[in-house]
Amino acid sequence: MIRELHNKLINKEITSVDLTQQYFDVIEKKDKDIFAYLTLTKELALEQAKKVDAKIARGEKIELLEGIPGAIKDNLCIAGVRTTASSKILDNYIAPYDATVIEKLKEVGAVFLGKTNLDEFAMGSSTENSAYGVTKNPHDLTRVSGGSSGGSAAAVATGEAVWALGTDTGGSIREPASFCGLVGLKPTYGRVSRYGAIAMASSLDQIGPLTKTVEDAAIVLSVIAGQDKMDATSAHSSGKDYTKYLTGEVQGLRIGIVKEYIDGLGEKEKKAILEVIKTYKKLGAEVVEIELPYSKYSLATYYIIQPCEVSSNLARYDGIKYGLSINDEKESGLAENGMPKKLLETYLDSRHYGFGKELQRRIMLGTYALSSGYYDAYYLKAQKVRTLIKKDFEKAFEKVDLILAPTAPTPAFKIGEKTEDPLQMYLADMFSITANITGVPAISVPGPEVEVDGKKLPFGFQLMGKWFDEENVLRAAHAYEINK
Ligand code: GLN
Image 1 (cartoon, rainbow, N blue to C red):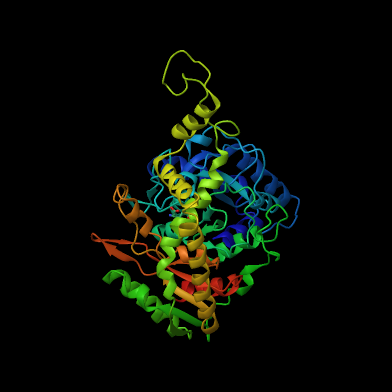
Image 2: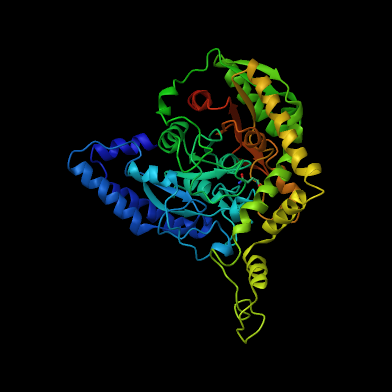
C-alpha cells in the first residue's frame, strides 16, 4: 500500500494534497457509522501534504512514508492538538509537545489525518470504555473493532487512513488488528520510545503500527524505532530499514507452538490456526511443540501489575495539574452557589467525574494491591511470577526462533456482549498479554477467516519473537501473507 502510493507520488500520478483530501472524503462519508476518529487535524494534514508536494515539484527525493496520510491513537501527543485518551478528565487537554514517535514521523513528512478513539486511557478490549462512544467494526457494524486501539484499526480497515499508530499494553494493537483483518505489531519493549504516549502501565506499554500489509508495518516501524534520551527505557539500538528482512521465505525457521493454546480454542478457530501451521510447514519452516508452563498465570499477573502501575500513573490527574477541574460546586452540578471547594474535594470530585467506571475499578485494584500489608502478597508475588514467565520464554527461545499462537480466542464479539462482565472482557487478551509481560515483539497477521452466525469474520494469528528480533517476526509474517 504505502510503497504503491509512494510510487504514485513520485511519478506525479497524484499529489499528496489530493491523496489527503481523498482520505478526508472517505472519513466524511463513512465515519458517521464507524466512529474511528475523535478529532480531525485537517489543517495540519493539508499543510504537511503541501510541503511534500512542493518538495516533489522541486525534484527532491522523498521518503517512503512522506506525504502518506495516517491516523494517530488519541493517547499520543501531537503539539497543539487536542489529546483526550478518550477520557473526560482530558477532554480539554491540548498537548504542549510532540511524542517522540510524532517527531520522527514529522521528520519524514508523514501526514496526520486525526486522532482515533480508544478505550479510556487504553484500558479495555473493545473501545466500549471510551468516554465518547464505541468504534464499530467495519466488517460488521454490530460488532466491536477491538481495543484499546479500535479507532486506529477501524480507520485503516475502512480506508479512512493508510496506516495508523496504536499502543499495546496487553494486546491493544494486536487484538483490534485481528478483529479488523489487519496487521498489528507490538515491538519489543524498549524498541520504540514511549515519550509522549500517555502513560498507562509503563513497564508494559509500547507503541506500534496497524496497517494493511506487513511491509507497511515494517515501513512505519523503521521510522518510529530507535533510542531516545527522553525515554530511559528505550533500548540502545538505532532504527533500521526493516523492509530489508521481508525475503518471502522461512526455510529452516523454527516455529514453536503450545498445545494448550490451540486445544483450548473453539472448533473453527482451531481449524484456522491449524491451517496457518500447515502453511508454514509447507513453506519449509520447522514446527516444534514447546511448553510455556507459567504462561497460564499471565492474565492474573497482568491484572495485578497493570492496575498497580495505573494507580500510580493516574495519580497525576488530580483536577489541578491537567484537564478537568471540578473546583466549584456549580461545575459538579451539586449546587448553584459556585462556592470554591476545598483542595481534597477538588481532587476527589475531579477524579470521580473525570474517570469512567473501568478506570476507577483498576485504580482501586492497584491501590489495594500496593497497600502496606498486601504489597508482598500481590504486587511482589506478581513480579516474581513475571520473572518465571520470562524464564519460560528464554528457555523456549533456545529451541525455536518464533512462537505461533492465536491473537485472541475468537473473532470480534458483539457490541455490549461483554460490558457487564469485566472478567469476560479481560479474557479477550489471554493470548496477547504474555508478550507484554515478557517484553518480546509480537505481530498479529490476518489468518483464515472464521465463520460466526453465518458470516465470515477476520481472525488473526500471532507470532512472538526473541527480544529485539523484529526481523524474523516481520519476515515470517510477510512470508505467510504472500504465500497463503
Ligand atoms: N485489554 C487490556 C486492558 O484492558 C490491554 C489494554 C492495552 O493493551 N492497552 O488492560
